[in-house]
Length: 183
Image: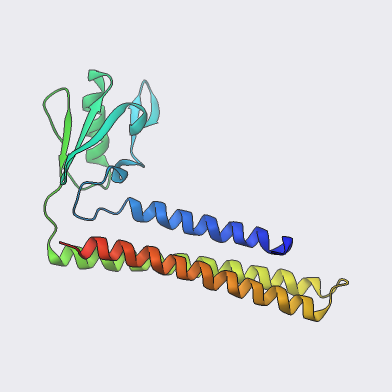
């Protein structure tokens, strides 16, 4: 692959990675500890990721259990969960925090599937914008000592790269949509 294309492929890879992270945080009816990935807890005055201060497990398909390493953190973690967009009230016995996920309704599943498709479309737009930037950069090369055929080849390669990453985005969106709609 041409060195001039590597930069754009890296950007497309980052776009796909960002989409995969976003899709991992979408709750699909069963307990997924990734819904807590962006959660920060006030730990001695510093916002700290929840994974750094507690053990997170999934003992049952619809329950997440959070065991803080320090008992003093239970209230802080509960506050952080309530303030977040997880949408579930934590229950605690003073030592362990439990998040019980209710069964999702058909309407909620369809709504989430639409949301996933929107995220996929946004990623496709980002990939296409990267392709546009690449083609603009290649056209600027025509003012230097590069032939039109080489520019055309670079543009074709950029299009092939774009097609590959759009197919990857579609695959990720389809997989997540299937997961959400499976009862």
